[in-house]
Length: 321
Length: 278
Image 1 (cartoon, rainbow over the protein chains, first blue to last red):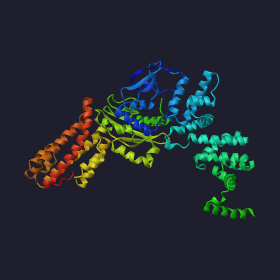
Image 2: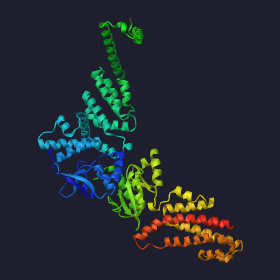
Image 3: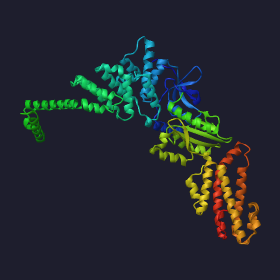
Image 4: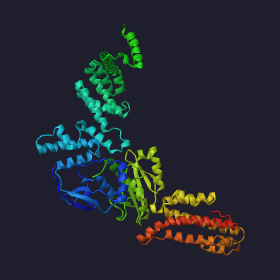
């Protein structure tokens, strides 16, 4: 970003200040706003806001929207402001990112929407879109955050509208969050990668999953990770494709009451548990080889020896001598 | 540009409600008075001399109302203040304490349901006129049960319309005097015809009875109260200053009425009249 020349501090009437057009949906935590309101009522605005003057003679916010809102609510006559030169559209957006997205004053969906715009503007300025690393450096977001944003950007419009409507409600009234859509999309991506035939059915599948979440059949957003595990079990655990498909079809069937947890338990839970135990057995085996090689068998704790003997008896019974 | 379209839909519902009820022009994003340190979500003029300020948000008792209540009471403008919240928040158990605090502080509450229809949860009067229930109950604690019940009706009337409440207290005091006249006629202290005169004539008649001399001061105070406050309510104020004074004085007048009634009741009983209401 270009260096901007700063002018001295001015005291501006709050009514001459307008919000930044790149900041449409700020999320201000109520407790923080209340605390700031009290502080400003008692002590005034201690930290100047930052603005630039537009061609209409008004001042557009760059930083300090909370302070400005409190000043308006308290009907203050003026607010201290530092005035900068008007930034370019890309610079303005990147600045908003660095101020608001990183302070988590934007909800994730807004962060994602704005990211699309950053990509567009960067492409227009540089002749090619930014890669993930460049995007991360520009916005300050981690690459993981950028990938999560991309999942939201790629949502069909009807779900973006649903999410927008949910995010407009107070937190305690929200049913669907960005996390819900991120987890759902991620799991569906995994499912379609392994079983491409579900690709054409995604609209109907999404609709079913949303309904099932709404009515409590799917009870937690994290259940979608089990959906991914059913699909990855085909290669990872050697589960038959038809078995995985059968369980997934039950989950994706709007007329079935099957939840993701039911499907997971039925299709792959045992196999995953088995794999987990297998790893534990490898770990035990590796330990025993080590102590044999180091000639430290006599150093084994009595409690561990007792457990190993019990294990030996049980294994002899189930595996035969 | 709005902060949140959820608050926008709440605000639209509230605007529709108040416009439907009062039909007055809604002014948004501006302060009622440049010296008042509070800019509500919107406001309108309820009558010539009463403003209604509306604060929309997710909490029943917003911080701005908490910190500016004192200023609202001191400002020389009669303002009723309403908070507007979603119905879900109104019904939530954790909201009840805050809702009670809001009511006790003298503010009103509007709730908006999921279909965007607003309804009044409880009303309010201009905050400068507010008398808390606790304060009122403390004031009437010296009265007999029947009188307390009658006083409660006056208070409820006051909480909806202070001028009406003031008239009701005046009527109650008039009733005490008329009953005193009836009791005095029953004891042959005065004639039945005298007992039926208006209180402006009845009080001097009662004051002329030697057996009732110990109640003279109380009777005089009651007549003075009635004359002052009935006239006050009856005549229209001439200008904005008078209007505001009228609104502020309503509170004082109502409390004065309660004190006058208690004093008169005791004085009449002390001279062996019933002290009952007409």
